[in-house]
Length: 326
Picture 1 (cartoon, helix red, strand yellow):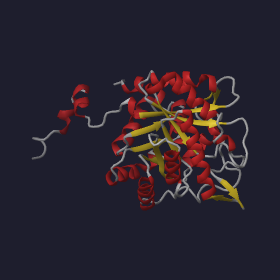
Picture 2: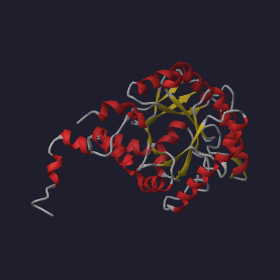
Picture 3: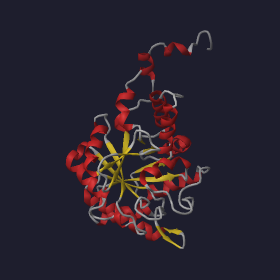
Picture 4: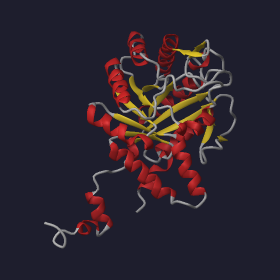
């Protein structure tokens, strides 16, 4: 049968009918809200390249989380900016490091009402801005994963629910899983940044986290944008090493990778709607070129439609309000 017997517009006549038949529903509970917490900061500090976003001081991290919880968000992802940096990233795994203190504060305040996730990387804590230990201008894989494991254990001691290793070092998931289990934290889950691409979309984040490399780039450990097969192999290896969930980053330019991950692996898929994707929307909205709310819903819907179970997004704090708009 075809037109005129078949009329596809019949099922699009009203908003109620469209909602009934929409297979993709955005739920704030499926969004994760990133928080940048800075040591020695006295009041929120706007991030110029991320309009509407701030670094927050430790004493305001619970208030920042509350704003997300009130929007229906169930999880936050913590990034720390320490007062002092050094080549060995010692504040990443310090007992009283900024993220460790934020974890304690959030879990003391919200308990099981909020899932607290800690990004496990060294770039915010090193003077050189790379994600690992440097020798002869090269990132050293094995010494780095030992420090990543140490960082993950320090997060667990502070009360973290989930650790999320993002350094893209070979063997990092196995090292962290082994370290957590040996210290009695077998209940701590791991979200692996399994397919993390070397992307130009990270620029605003590097402003926010003060993590721009002082020399070179990250192409020797993050993935080339053109590769699908490499992503599948990275995901497979991380699952074999003990990852409970896997992540694709960035999201919007890599919807094909999200779809492949969902089709090929039986673990939850997380997608990171990254800072550059967020800031492009904000910049266009500020110039009056787009409807920010409509475009944000469309972007998040596309990521969900591709296969993401959870989405990390800087738009999360407006989730409940914007998702209920017609």
